[in-house]
Image (tube, rainbow, N blue to C red; front, top):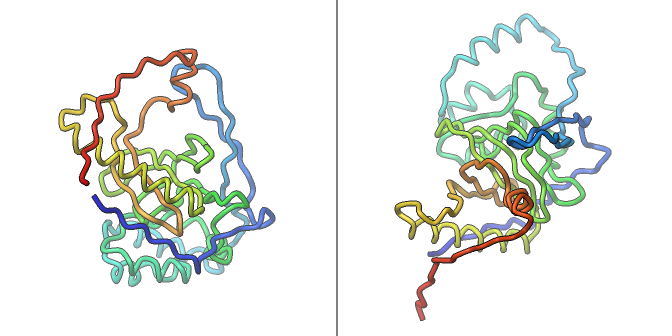
Length: 245
């Protein structure tokens, strides 16, 4: 199995803390646990006015009736005035566009930020209703780890809720992430009846220099599961790798 990793060193997606949008606290309930986890989640600041609000509203109503997916050319024809210059170029690399983000309630200036998308820790800055890979809609933040963060997303292609892991914009973490992809694909391909209880990988891709991995969404993360068992784990491994040498 060969997996190609495309790393563009010319793109440095960095964003100053001063450029970050206002932070809104969001409370997420973890399963049956009554404890609430308070997670800071960025959101757009809406303090703008349209020059011609009436005309804009009429245009929005017409455009919002357009059904996805669309080809890149159709997307540009219908939504060009709502897209940033980078978005106009990015969508040409896709065969089909499934989702464009919250383009009707945000301005181009709010979404541009000088094409700077990462915080000082090289994490991709996530926004509610933002798009990832012009397919996934960000719903909420599930967790943050040393390798990156995981968001609850809606897949506009399959119409399913998924857990999307976004790896940090870091060469070592990205390389390790592709090893994870390879292992998960091996497990999936060798577990036809889904008997090994290994989380299913659904998709993976590079987006703005971040490796993203889509999983089936589960109830709790591994750490919480271990914590509930007081870190007493009994594991039986049934995974065997063939030696191709």
